[in-house]
Image (tube, rainbow, N blue to C red; front, side, top):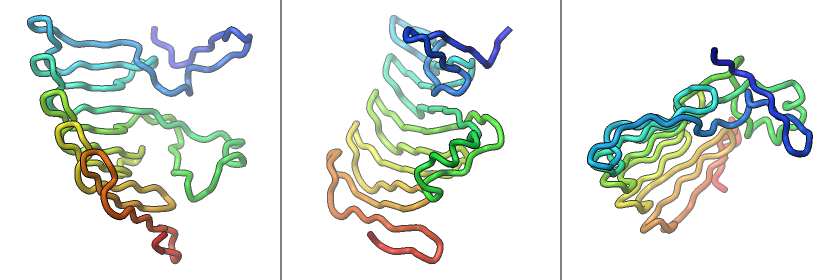
Amino acid sequence: PYSEYYEYEMPDNSKYREKQEQPFAKKIEGYFKDGKPQGVWKVYDQFGKLFIEIPFEKGMINGTMKEYDNVYPREEMDYFMSESEYLADSVPPKKKHYLYATTEFKNGFRNGEYNRYNWLGTLNEQILYKDGFKEGKAFERNNLAYTSLNYKDSSLDGYVRTYLTLKGKDSLL
């Protein structure tokens, strides 16, 4: 049977618990047609959870690639060691597996939106791509600030504006 808790001995005799490690690819499922990947390939993490979904068409990524992640409740000590209460996102009461990012592909290149989400499903970052290059408006946000920027041929183009989003203290940086 599958267990969600593993403990490993490291070369330096220290141990780590796989339970709260970042996900890594452990199993891949997919099909080949004429020697090329075809259809939706699925990558599973060390916990058996879906990690990445990659749509292939004639060997090229085509469609929406989806990436998943895990978020864990904080231990009491983490609150004393955290950088800032404003930067810290809320955390779930128990481990949660969630959609972390989506990326649009066409003919093997990023083409369209890249979207990154937090565990609550809130959009935290968006970048537009054209033929594999960052192109157009983009934004990033967290609990402290919101940043708007623009790309041309994957280079920043124009002003980068960051706004504080603290209640009652909104301002342009």
